[in-house]
Amino acid sequence: MDLFRVFDIAGSGMGAQSVRLNTTASNLANINSVSGDPEQAYRARHPMFETIMQGFGDEASAGVRVLGVVEDATVPQPVYEPGHPEANEAGYIYRGNVDLATEMTNMISASRAYQNNVEILNTSKDLMLRTLSLGRQ
Image (cartoon, rainbow, N blue to C red; front, side, top):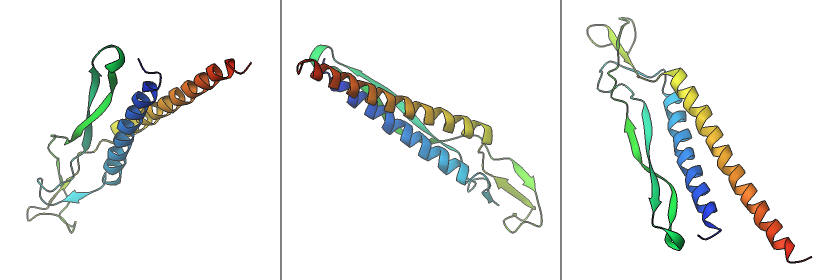
């Protein structure tokens, strides 16, 4: 296996966690969005990942791939607020289905996973540099 593949693997993990952080940020930014129509209410978005494990030996590749971003299927709950400018004719508004606790957990988890991949890159680089320095002595 090529020694530099660890950089590809960690890089794919960093890219995946970056997508996860961006979708979480989008969800948090829209947490207070409302609509008079349940179909128009904001739906939380979540990235879908796929593990890549192909081949053996020198042709092996591994990592993570983002398959796409899907919307949460949870139906927005109606809230009776007849004075709200977005209320429908029955006086209901529909808030997005974003859960603050879930999004904060996702944000912390993605941030730590990203940091772990950075540490993998730094440790691998240091080990390779130390290996190269062995030949100089």
